[in-house]
Length: 285
Ligand code: NAP
Image (cartoon, rainbow, N blue to C red):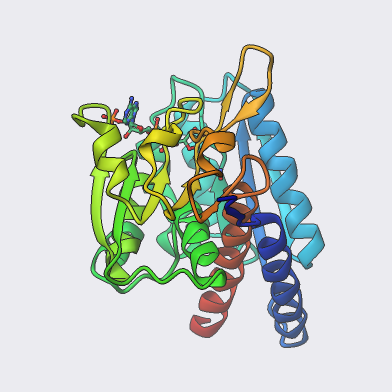
């Protein structure tokens, strides 16, 4: 079997085109979505991600404001900037590119962002709303995965779903979102015994680990849908996912690739959240 490759690039393009129209309409009504992008330090990967997000904004007609802070920026200085952005009516949404330097407590940074401007949906208020089934914003990567499934007609209800990884930004919210669509969800992590056996139960398998090709062909049930969130670099500086694509695409019915799979979807949902934040604030104001 040769699996269908689920294209995040194509779906993200479609979402961005729809957002472009929404933003044009908002602007006609005096609402100008604006994303504040904060980057601290000189991490090259973070710089690439920030540039991609700014390009997405430009494509859609969302204004972006970059705040590039020195590596030596103190936690207090960063929190003061967030406070200023929280209170700036021109700013619809705020994103602080992760990771921040080690001397800054990322949890305090997340807590400082006004939940109404929480582009990444990391704030506990927004995580709580997702948990109780009343989300305002959606966590970008897991929501991107859900959109890819939906777009490709992959129904989650009643399916065995296995999520490998339990981080706050991917694994846990992914599990909640699959559960909210009536999947039967198992979450695996570094202490899971018999990972291969558990993964093999999955009709829908989402890998969000960050270990190159940890998901082998033998982990996959014939006909399963396999979504690869992970991104790692090989010794040769090549980007690879958590999934052994060559082997798994022979067994699965559908699979995503690194790159062009989940990555573009993550950014598309970030843009959706920014537009949503602008709308929410306009309706309040
Ligand atoms: P993370 O915070 O490092 O979490 C990794 C998870 O994998 C943890 O829950 C960990 O378990 C689990 N794990 C580690 N080794 C394992 C093993 N041998 N077997 C089973 N589980 C294992 O990472 P993250 O932020 O969730 O990101 C995961 C990956 O997705 C990374 O490669 C990241 O770069 C990528 N990512 C991609 C996008 C995108 O847009 N494409 C977005 C976000 C993240 P414990 O909890 O027990 O430690």
